[in-house]
Image (cartoon, rainbow, N blue to C red):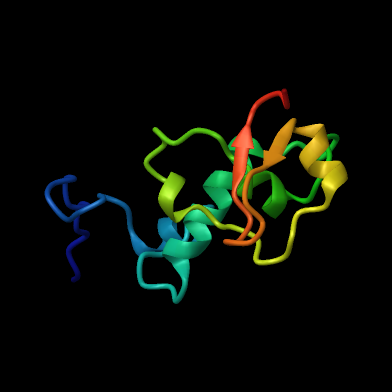
Length: 109
């Protein structure tokens, strides 16, 4: 006769959830390839993306102006130039195109 085991109580390094629970979770499994990058991308997209606003989700996240966010330095950024109409929508001014595109968030004076 096999004994039914209770799940471990959550503690250091333990979630208290079985692997089946993790499989049904929306969160990526910690051993999944690329899961940290995907988790960061998903969080940034969830935080800032507005499908009714100008620009793609990646352009909008690239223009994030919340430097106090713990994900700010590792947020996904587009490698392509952001179109002028998107920059105007967010009132972003290009500061220095010769050194790579840098932005100043705020109203152009």
